[in-house]
Length: 363
Ligand SMILES: NC(=O)C1=CN([C@@H]2O[C@H](COP(=O)(O)OP(=O)(O)OC[C@H]3O[C@@H](n4cnc5c(N)ncnc54)[C@H](O)[C@@H]3O)[C@@H](O)[C@H]2O)C=CC1
Ligand SMILES: CC(C)CC(=O)C(=O)O
Ligand SMILES: [Mg+2]
Image (cartoon, helix red, strand yellow):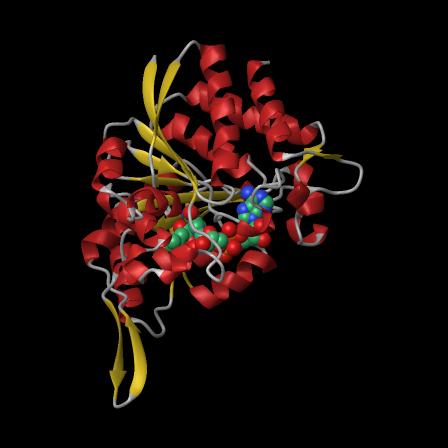
């Protein structure tokens, strides 16, 4: 089969990790006889340097013409990069938020599970992890909430005051809640809706709408949890979670926390999906300016994001399984990038990890 894939290399470690994911996708083509054609798309800092804008209409249109888009990460070091001298709406992050909105990518899925092989990289004690490890997925609303609300900075009575607005309507909550319940149905049938309903009106609406949606899924258990408690429970007992459903900013924060419990943020993949099967696939982490250009970044989150793309947008389940198995084999064979390294393992660079996983796919 032939597929057209958009590639956003992005900034910082973005190009390094996307190159490794592409290597793995090429091995999938060889093994299964597919043809992937790639369209390079500009976003973030790279787009500012080329066009003056973090996102252009051309990128949006080209992305729409693809079957799916695979992305590295965007952004730079806010203290040193010239991009942060621009006004906020022209900075790299505005491009990422803009493309999510323009493509209607409201559902962000971030699976976090502990590979048995990475026990040594997980900061939690063995008695917390137990025999089975943990396996949860964060379903984060991605096109609403604080990141998209009205904002302003102004002088009020001589005092500089900044305002960000957190707004959700019931339809935005209902569609992401349904997505979470559908996913839970295929897993362990439990949704934990996370909010701050003891304080925020928007959170109280999340609880109300989620309870209504739960009636459509009587086979799925619904639990509500306050976000501060959830942050604590993720390190106290991550096994208790199956599907965590939450709004944009809480999901952003909780997914970084969940990633570290899997051993490293370099392991956490993600899919950002619209109403149909189109998606933008990206690791949960950022552009890691501190390790850029050193060939030490972990490419696994991006490679697992490519596996999600094969599964969700291209409907290639067998190929997605093969990539996931290839990652598992690389870990069982002892290959470790610096972030997940432990004594006795083979210290592996970014490019070596891509080579090993691509070779494992070829068999
Ligand atoms: N989706 C995206 O493109 C995102 C972009 N950003 C942007 O990235 C830039 C850097 O943000 P930070 O707060 O430093 O977050 P970050 O996620 O880039 O880095 C946090 C820490 O994790 C490490 N890390 C991240 N990915 C890694 C990998 N694959 N392998 C090994 N170590 C890894 C970094 O070296 C750093 O120590 C900022 O400009 C930020 O706005 C941040 C988050 C998401
Ligand atoms: C620009 C940010 C909202 C990106 C981010 O941190 C994320 O999506 O996880
Ligand atoms: Mg984040």
